[in-house]
Image (cartoon, rainbow, N blue to C red):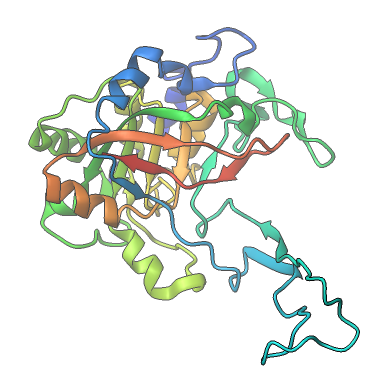
Length: 314
């Protein structure tokens, strides 16, 4: 694979959206989603079918915890329905409740990255100092609340395994610009500024096979050479069934070039670790690879992202 390290470093400037929408902007590429794009996306919801693009969160894994603070075991009656000694005979309401703890960044949980998630040379999107993300307040700039209005626009699926005639791409196999162009051409679609791009590699099947033990490692994903394409086409948010970047990246000094250039320079919101298999099957059934896309992150003050359940509405 050709080393494009110099190009990637140059793209930090040439693909930059810093100050494009003003010096205080925190929305980044979500600015590309206009009211017109939302109305056009709503028109795609013709039969009301909804497909989730998220994995289940498994509390037995290392990145998710659930502590029950109220359960159905605290009962007033025994198994035969008889009132327990000391219980009231006037009826009793009880509740189940829990505490949830998540480390959602990483390879396990479907989540969205806000522009405060990644830094380059001490800065994040729009030239903001990385020091404005601290251990007390979290992200005081560029946090996930910039997307608190939700992401509602047209979504487009690029199914690379279907294009290549395989079930799953090989570990370390890159998604290239030619794959994006050919898949869109086969679908008869023109990608428009403000759309969300979802790229399927088939990796979700490997993830499901190992359940909570999935750690990623070498995986297929977008090659850094796709970055000018993403910028030129006005991608509002990029999602995939991996954490976007192919590994190994083939770019010296950049462990995550899609993340680094995308989040820091472009302000491109990234939706990692989706499950796109059900969506791909439904698109193939309908022979339709466009849909209304909906995602609403948690409005968590200072958060650098959010667990997410992206939805495709047909």
